[in-house]
Amino acid sequence: MSRPYVFLDPTGAGDLGLCLIVPHPTGIDYGHQCGGYLCEEKMMEGYAVPLGQREIELKIYEFFDREFAGHCYPPRNTWTPDRTAKLNELLAQVSCTRCSEASGSEEEGGLTLDPERIHECVEGWIPVKGPLGRAVLTLINCD
Image (cartoon, rainbow, N blue to C red; front, top):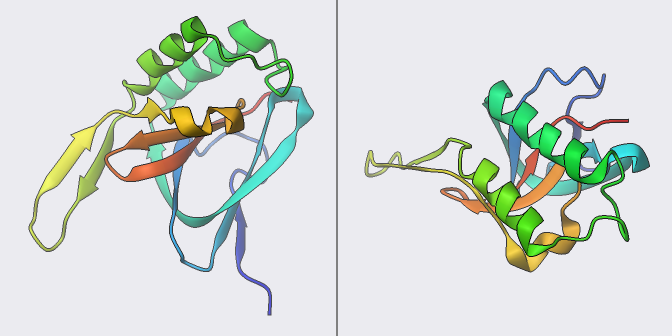
């Protein structure tokens, strides 16, 4: 029997906003179209956390448009220190909260680019670290 597969934003309307895919052995794969004009489809097993936050989503989308003009895929997506710093400034503005049911505590913070997985970073699929640990941030993708 095949595993459940959830394709985020299947119509391409971009109505979802920002979404985190957090790796976890759930038995559910989440997929997303990314990579600008390449229209690559990536997927990850885990759980999805809808964040919304359309305003910052558009700022991140505009960053990719300015920097890569729809061609954010190897070998065109060179991650210079300047590009990395600009993206991290935007990711820091993404609000993410981790709640602990057991203790009732909350940890809130922004996101940062995961430098160990920067080679995976393309428009619409950004490897990050934040309050929920390692994850992938998804957003609208041009195509």
